[in-house]
Image 1: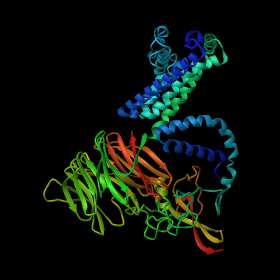
Image 2: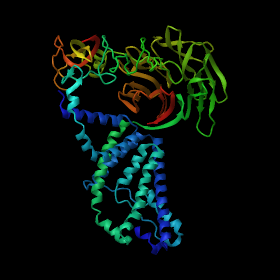
Image 3: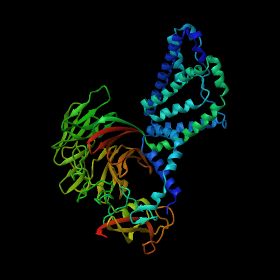
Image 4: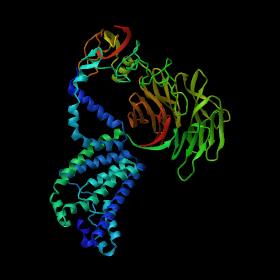
Length: 437
Length: 199
């Protein structure tokens, strides 16, 4: 490969430099594109299976490189097509060579590390991050086309010198892969892919549609953003959104309104001291405050007369927060002077249980689907976004914000995506984060 | 007394936990890569951090013995009932370490109640006793405040309180001592209460 970029092939020094530049650029772009693709696929399939696969692959690859295990690896025995040099113009063949080598899997791979890197890119579950990491692979390819010539005028001789030291590469590779196994083994504790979605707070999600509240010129309004290219719908004044398909529940000065947000038609209106709606149409949960007590109420808004069912009650000094309702499960928090807890009521079985109870920390703002629950745990050291599968005893930390200046606040959950408000009380700056797990 | 190597191990554990739990997976992997490079210079840093000073001085009035009970802000300062206070000035704090007013609501530096992003007042966080609630939740040992002794600190009488349990291990991880505990209990961790009485 190195000897390809010589004046003998390229025609002159300037054409040689052009060929190398195009080769390097194409290698970078191709490897970044491969990384982005893998990261995108990872974001769709979920990062945990890919992370486990990457760790296992890295372990096997380390054994292979150390010579302990003999394992075949997926391999294309081809090299770059030589005839391109003669059939195609220089810019095209040099860029083609770069792209082919940058993609990696089209040409011969002497070590297994490439496939481990592919699995890690999947595990990242973030196209931009995976592209940035994989671009380094393309940079390495480009570097190897340039560097031997830097110290050795003859390209083939430089390659021969490298081959002479080839026994060092598997040993170094085995060490690096061993380190990768360790890092991948501890990585699950580090959480999930986090993306900022910009200003806003109190997220509500259903499928790929996200609603959030946002302060605008002193007024709080609710933005409902369906998947592109559909336009964002705005409701003002409104806050504390809850979303279920085309239905949006929100709080305003009079109480709670439920609308069809696609055509802005009113579905139901509850006037009074009602707040914090949670919607799983036709069921609506909300907080009713009579001054002395806060009560969590569940009702069916499709019926002409509201039949209110009180689920939980606390004195007004305590807090029931923002309930969540989805998939036959109603979740809420209860924060009192002596502790806090997250509760879930199964509406099908009427079984109520505490998901988390503590005398010390503040457990708050749950969101549910039929299979999972997320909530925020506040500690002096920071706030933690926790996840639990119903039926499992284990709790997973999706993300963590250190300190007391910036905290995590309200949440939303849909499928394998959680949303959380990250908020700085001193500046009142709030953003919504998307957490893919 | 906590041995220097124990202190170093604790710092390493804390660093590992912080690395693992304080980041997203992406930033974690990135920083671990940086940590590998930084490890070469780590020995010099470790040599520069001398543990003897922090070993000898726990807090005023308490030297060389049992460690602090779990607390929000690093030092186990309590009021007369065992609830947490801010170590620097004795202001009442909730379990999250936030300053609170007389009713228990979190307040800012001006004493105004904190508000959530939508302008509503923030809920009150729990405020519970460091020995009976915090230590019990962390270690499940049935701890209670018992004996106390007194020292003069910063010109006022400081009451040092033993948080006692039947555990034969103390919070440091080694064997517990009887100290000022009674009814067969031993010292698990310690707290202090500044009385305000001049000395």
